Length: 84
Image (cartoon, rainbow, N blue to C red):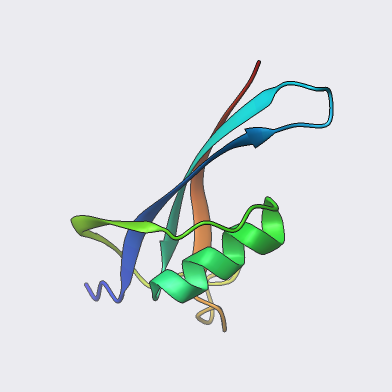
């Protein structure tokens, strides 16, 4: 099996809309750190440098039918959010 993607973690702590704090930990598989960063920024809304989990890889990401690879190789695997 081919594993062209790496797994990254993006973490952000900052203010939320209800005068509190939010803490995000997002795990994303992507072809590069730049792709991971842009994917998280587009879907979740924060812009932080992702951290590569050493030796953590992910296979090719396909469309919903599994017939062809996605043009942008990025997928959010987990999104843990805490608001206080």
